[in-house]
Length: 490
Image 1 (cartoon, one colour):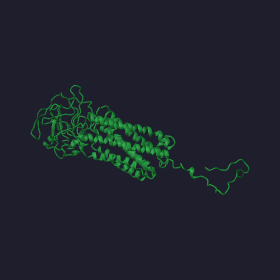
Image 2 (cartoon, helix red, strand yellow):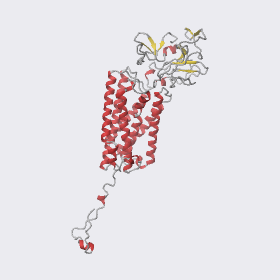
Image 3 (cartoon, helix red, strand yellow):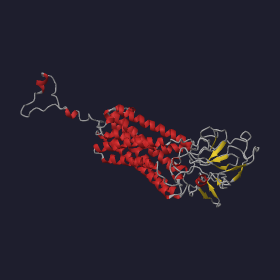
Image 4 (cartoon, helix red, strand yellow):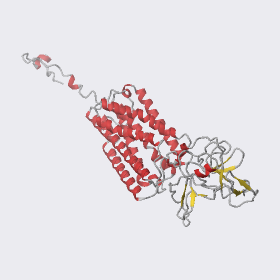
């Protein structure tokens, strides 16, 4: 309960089933809205209340629409962090700032244990003075998702606390040593996407884009699989990992990596969009949902790198295997970064510097995709360059979303942006699938930039023809009467 009498609410709970309902991300300028029972309540930090108590608030009242809402709040405040309410177990509730350190608090750990300096799964912590308190934070789940204390216990103090607007509230706390500790709190993820309702428009668009990804997955698996790549380049699949500069093994290895990048990007997107899009059905474990969503981005950068290698023999990746291996190591690091941060998001431990992951993807993507476009144009492969342009647009899109707010799940702008993003990703995957099949065809025809460069060798070493007016030696003259035939052209 806030000091102004308004209640704080997390997810609304169905009284019959006990299941959590969907949170409607649509609030007024003060951070509240009315429910089905027409009662006004808060789900997020109440900026009007905090401001009236002299606390720090963002410049924009729609701060919660930002992709990274915590970025809209100063990391540290010089103002007081007022007490804004009391929980039902008797512990105090503060806004987003620690009243002692003045530092911004974000939702934290994956269990109900407290660690000084970070919030537990109940959105609280033991402050430096030993007092346990809850915080209303700018990151999901925003309000306490569970209670550290119990509704029963021995009252140890009673009195009043007066805030800066002279509201008197009963202060009935419970001794932390005499109450039960909450356990088994449900941990909700801090996803790169909002959890959308299972509405017709979301179901339809995700089904279409997911179905098209299935088609791409099937086409790539049928027409450019590792067996066909090995046959096109000559030899078996074992040598597919070689990093040679101009030999068939180097091209084969690049094609193999490009195949797996395209195949996995399309496969993971199709699973995400068809089975449990945006976690709307809660079918996947949090970790699996985050990994399925995030894996596409390092896979796209891997595909971009291989398209640079395959564009032509005249590029630094071919002439310097060490540079090529170094670039692959950077991509491997991106995979690790993506997996680690997806895991942190899945368990509600997303750090304040999580933007490093997106910067990594964007910065490295701009470098690699720019090179892919450049060398594709140099080789006269306009279709390859166009395919890479889609990938470049996807990177720019990610950069823009770091700083632009697109609304909540109920807004048409969020639906439009996410739908556009899914089909843009589809165009990127289709583009690299085209590059893969075209490069495999080139390798098969012996024009893959070093795949079969010795194919015409035999035609270049024919013995010179004798002039037509000079008769050639007879068979008896060649072999001294032995049965030896004259040499034939080779």
